[in-house]
Image (cartoon, rainbow, N blue to C red; front, top):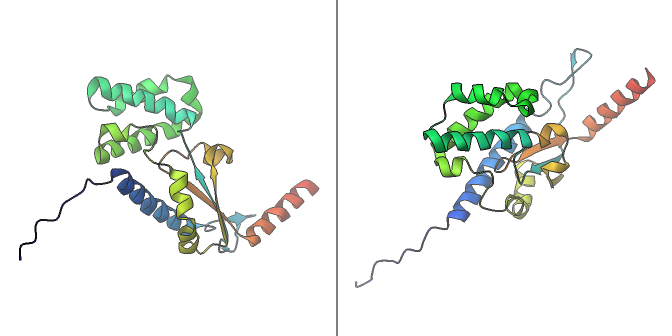
Length: 198
């Protein structure tokens, strides 16, 4: 046999990253799906757990404002000290008026970014966007996601069109999902009706 060595092409880094992104997103969606409805109460009594039938995925093109403020500070800190010191960052970030509302979430977010830097390096860890089109990756795999989550409907919308809770937490590379079911919709409507009668 005189076969030569096979030629090796360059690794498509974007395809690898988008593949990893899809695996992580699907996993986080399944975890949220499994926990959906558990612990819901009404008048102190637990509500029956309803299997979700519909879902909405929220995708962010940029970090929420409060997180962008922190990312700018972290990038400056890393550029100057080649590390991020929690004590120094807590003191600096505590002085920023725009972050007062998010005080309890500031340092957990800093820790999340620090862990990301350890995992993927400072350049990737401090990036404020991803290198591929998240929406496109999710749309191309929408049927797979709908199937793996056992949903009747699943749609994708920009995070800036979402409710505050999702808009203020969703960030590039970390899509969020919400679930509903007809039973929950009915329970919500009944609650609203009772509230308006009071």
